[in-house]
Length: 60
Image 1 (cartoon, rainbow, N blue to C red):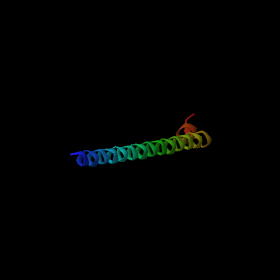
Image 2 (tube, helix red, strand yellow):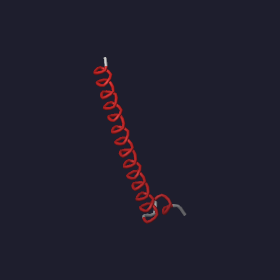
Image 3 (cartoon, helix red, strand yellow):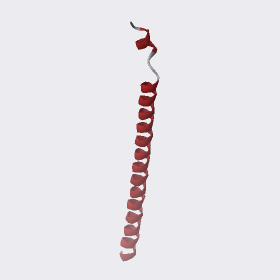
Image 4 (cartoon, helix red, strand yellow):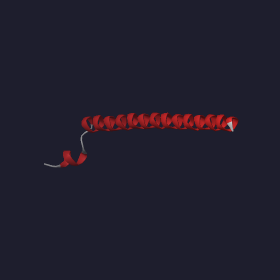
């Protein structure tokens, strides 16, 4: 029974470390997606500020 307990302990430890790796990878992807999204929004805001809207320019 002692060997079985050791094997189960090692298996649980490996499974927990696998979950930790997935959690870290998920966090990294979330951060990257947020950075890209913020960059795109900022670029769009700059472009909208530089290039006037044709509908606003046509109005008297």
